[in-house]
Amino acid sequence: MSAGGAVAPAARDPGHVALLISFALLAAALVGAVFLVRGQQESQRWVAHTLEVEEQLSSVLSRVQQAETGQRGFLITRNEAYLEPFTTGARDLRTEMAELKLLVADSPIEAERAAKLEKLAIERLARLSQFVEMIRKGDSAGVTAGVKTGVGLNQMQQIRALIAEMRAHEADLLKKRNHIATLQSNLLLLWLAITAIGVAVVAFFVTRSATRRTHVAILAQDAAEAAHARLIAETEQREIAEAQLRQLSKMESIGQLTGGIAHDFNNMLAIVIGSLDMAKRRVGKDPAKAAHSIDNALQGAERAAQLTSRLLAFARRQPLAPGALDANKLVAGMSELLRRTIGETIRFETVLAGGLWPAFIDAGQLENALVNLCVNARDAMPEGGRLTIETANTHLDDAYAASHTEVVPGQYVMVSVTDTGTGMPEDVIERAFDPFFSTKEVGKGTGLGLSQVYGFVKQSGGHVKIYSELGVGTIVKLYIPRHFGEEDRRPVPAPEAELPQGRGEVILVVEDEEQVRIMSVDALRELGYVVIHASGPTQALAMLDTHASIDLLFTDIVMPDMTGRTLAERVQERMPHVPVLYTTGYTRNAIVHNGMLDHDVDFLAKPFSIAQLAAKVRQVLDERG
Image (cartoon, rainbow, N blue to C red; front, side, top):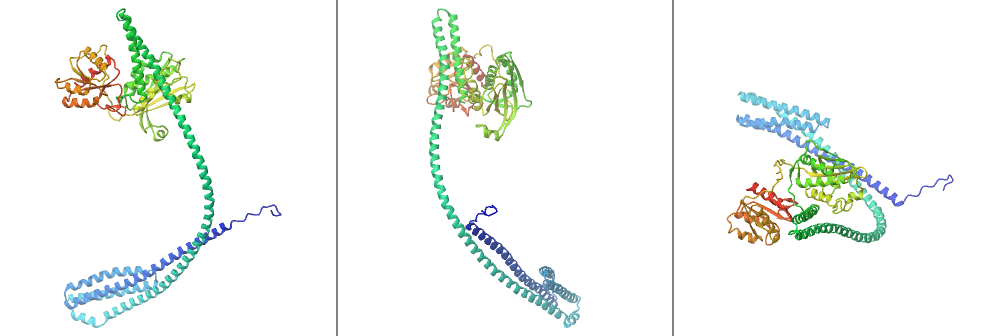
């Protein structure tokens, strides 16, 4: 510390100072080399310029001599053909002189000589032309007298002398410029040597510095590898813990799912079995009570069928028959039903967008989804409130798709259900779509409503989003893919009061489950159809030999030997116009692809009631008969 109390500046690292000096020398050497290279290039350009001037002087002299030779040949032979070199030489001389004057424009002395040379050349050409005209007029004596004067000879001597002077001047310039080029070349070599020395010095200091830094880096790498090894060990332990946690969570979800299914199915089976048992006991004693028990059993079976349908919807395995749909018309048509469903304490309103795009969706499933959402909204408003169904055109962009898995960017028709109910906290929103998850009291909900909506919309290529705030309300938005094309304007058949009857049509029923086959055959015969039946595809094909024609093939899809789809193709090879109605409890590949029924396929899902069977069979026969 100095007397004044200031701290002396720390001494600089000698290696750094030397490195900076070396870089400065190297930079100076490189800059000098650049300038020398440019100077040498300039000298070489001037050398090339001198050679061009000498070549151009030779061309000028050659053109004058060419014109003189052509004129002399004409004088001797009087043949116009000999004038061609004269004419060409005279024409090209003007071009050669113009190029020469352009080349020597940088030198006043040479420019003056070039101008004088041009004048002499023009005078020489004029005199040659004069002799040509005199010959053409027959004045040979005049030509001879003109030649004897020696004027032409004197002109050529002056031209040659002037060209010789210009060549000598250019030769002198060439010598000087070669000397300058040589000097610059030597200087360039010197600068390159200095540059090489500078590079060597820099390389020395850089190498020494790099060696030190390499040593430090090796030590740091050893420390990093040790830390990395510790991190890998910790990561492996964390992954094991996370895998165990995921497995526990998965088992908990599976347990919740299977427990919910077992609970609901056991309740429904208890209704079915108990009611049928009571009906069996009462059928002879009290037919009215037996019929009541049978009705209870049917209700239990229908609830089981609905549960299966909801589970398939959640798993995205239900067969869908999507088509172009006007969501505004669907919502408007359901308004009265929804008002009755939610009750008088809730104000119901719709906000339908103008110019709404057609949606591509299964209309029946969308109706079920809206009913589910409205029922949930009603339950969230026990003291009353407002429920709004809104439609709109929307576009989900790349940014939205990036933050939401399974969302494909594009245009969608949005249908939302908004309530002013109790709302949901974040942890409930995260689990809202889980099957059998419900915040309602026991007996007031299955926990499958939202999961069914979620699975159905996802299977349709759409997207579902929930927005909710405690004490404010909830919005559930369904984003349905837009349909590109014409709207499906086919009228929806109205429900009939009585079951549609058969008109004696012949139906081939193919079903490998005997009891299901017997039930289907009895039902179809009860409806007025002629029925033949087979227990499998092989027997069905054999029966075609004894039956000339059939009006409908009603076949299961999943069977031994071959699928119902393959059987239908074999039957239609022999009877091309026979319509086919498929049925199954679950299928993935035969007639359903990507969750959608194949085009122009008629399908009746198991289990089905006699009314559903009657309506579907009649519809297929009427449409395709």
